[in-house]
Each structure stands twice: as structure tokens, then as C-alpha cells.
Image (cartoon, rainbow, N blue to C red; front, side, top):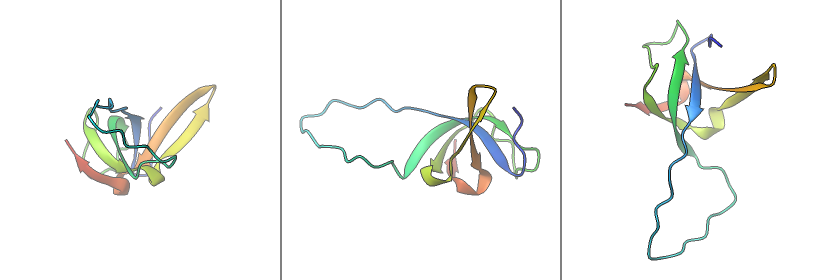
Length: 83
């Protein structure tokens, strides 16, 4: 799947929870920022982010299902930083 219009095809990475001394309950709300690995960049992105780990705004994530497979995209303008 090749992204278009300044989008990035990404895979959101799950960070392992670290065991601590204190228990802090989590609220049932999505995290505002998440990390992801870029699988492919659109040709019109300002640079090629393919293979890089990025931090993104979670609200800009787009998930598309095509032929039974889920693809996750983010617009280049939703990047916070890149590796």
C-alpha cells in the first residue's frame, strides 16, 4: 500500500509498561502522543521517513481496511519529531 497526499503508512509501536513501586490507575482515554515506525512515505512528503521511529498526535491517525487488512496512516503535519 503506497500512501499519497503527504501521508505516512505507519505501524504504531506498543511501549512496554515498566514495573514500579507505586500503582497509578490508568484512565480509559487514548494517549495524546504515541510512537510509531514509518513503513512508507508518500512521494510528496518533505523528506523520506521510511524506517524511522516518529512521535505523532494520536488524534490524526487514520485506519483503513482494504481486503481484510488494516492499514494505519498519519499526515506528515501530525509528526511531533522523528528519529
